[in-house]
Length: 145
Image 1 (cartoon, rainbow, N blue to C red):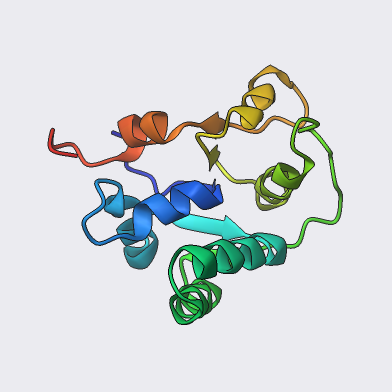
Image 2 (cartoon, rainbow, N blue to C red):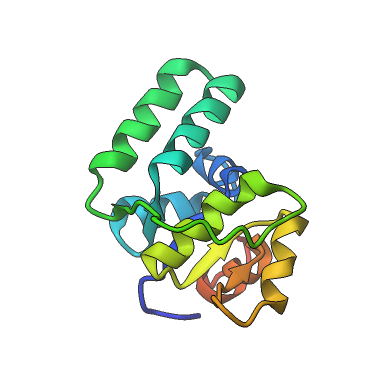
């Protein structure tokens, strides 16, 4: 298990999987709350988080979560000034890639197969980890998670 606080970008589905109190991945959101994980995001990512969360929960929950993310000392908002367009199969995913590059994030965490192309691109280098890979590197050391 790595002990440094990783700077990460979370794909929307990973964020949603981590916010439930009974989720086996709650350790990720708790890490953002307590500073053992630094979440990097952009305005476009925040807007997507809010839109998807409002659909899956309620608008109030979505607004509360995005408000928290904008004021948390363990969340860093960056604005990418260049669009690399590295993911051609789903251009909407590029907002996460561009944020990871602009924020110099350690990892982009996603289970979306469109991000696999990043593993073959030498420049700009973006480390993409699946949720399982991220959990193996940074997750709880007990076997129940």
